[in-house]
Image 1 (cartoon, one colour):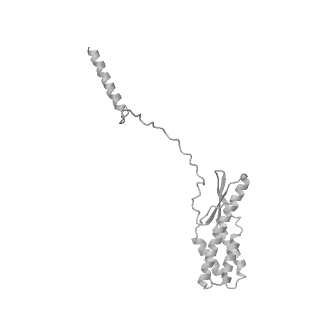
Image 2 (tube, rainbow, N blue to C red):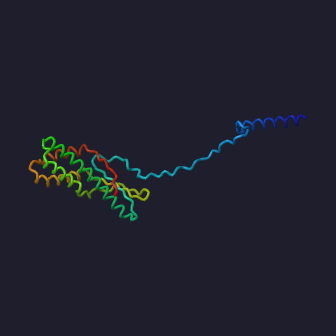
Image 3 (cartoon, rainbow, N blue to C red):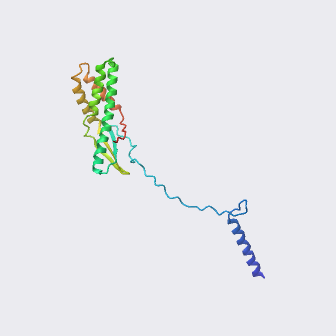
Amino acid sequence: MKKLHVIITMLIVITLFTGCGSAPATAGGRQESAPATTTAPAAATQSNVPSWLDELPTADAFWGIGYIRLQDESAALRTATRLARQDIAEQLSTLVQGMMTNYYREAGGLNDPTAIRHIEEVGRFVWNADVSMAIVNNRTLVNGAWWVRVGLRKSDARNTIVDILDNEASRYATWRRDEAIRMLDHELARSQSRPTPRTE
């Protein structure tokens, strides 16, 4: 009799525990099974740009970025490097044109057609300047596209621009070379390279 009492007590305890763990009943009396807990697979979120894209350039250099996707990887690397150098040339051209515009504005000759032509010509020469001394400092293959970043020291950029200003100074009597170079040094010192990825 005592054994029977113990068995009955154990069955009651087991029933109580089983009842507490069962899923709640719905309004219709059915029991809903507990939602299965599954671990979702990690999303394959591969970035389309290199991790270094947002890095800031050093204060003494201009950076340029180019990228392209070609079947020929060797051609892609060469093209992306060329595009990165073009990015630097564009930055320098914008800087010099802004400097010259300020120069002529302060001199009171900004409305002179000769001054406008001078600004445009110097900007074009800088745009087409040889910046082959810009050195590759990062390159990455991302989703089949080569990304290349090049760096050009400001001292090399200055020499390139001064050569162009020297050539142009002989054509414009009002263009004061020494003052222009002082302005150039000032602009280069305070400028911050802001590369814009270029592609074809």
